[in-house]
Image (tube, rainbow, N blue to C red):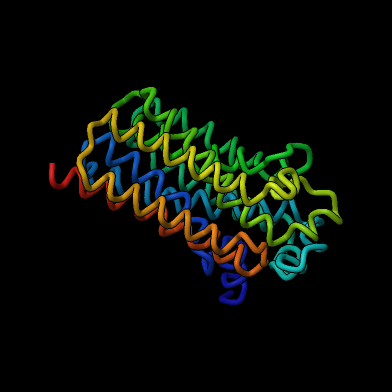
Length: 285
């Protein structure tokens, strides 16, 4: 029993929380901006726990969709489903249970948030298949990972203003940046098996494209801060995020696999800078 649970834990990447953090940071930015400070406690915990559950469900669906592809990628061939240690139906069952638990969490929230959650599940469930035909699937990942932004505004304000959609677009560019660095790790394997990724699409312009995406993300977040008239801590947070992005350039410019992976993981700190600046700006307002 415990061995099975350990396999399920590996399936949903409990041992690799970076995905949950990259999903959580934009949600937290949005919650604080929508509430103009700390959101109601019950909304905060619904979104934090829901983020973990949905990221976990997404991992299970991703491994089910990529079960044949992952056999040919060095980094993924030992995943529990790919290695045959759990059955295909188990991955689907785990994903379904986690998604249902996440939906149960938002039952106390308004109807708009519930409808947006349906869209979020559809987007998360369909993302793995975009790698078959979409040249930059990382853009679709950015929508999936940023959909907590409109949901947060809906939960707090009962509406989704233009600001939320602009922030979602910004998150798309951020996701293209960090997931292109991630895709650079697997580029050789992906070329052999015919998977489409932004690292392949951008080719030798991959590093330039990543830095351009960081710049667009930061500009859109600066616009959001200006619209909300946030104070100096927010701008210090954005400056910290910009310095972090420049540090990532030093990691990825040589296109070393492990350095690119390190840059991907380090995006947790970029997201933390933005949140820290946002939270402090409201705390000192």
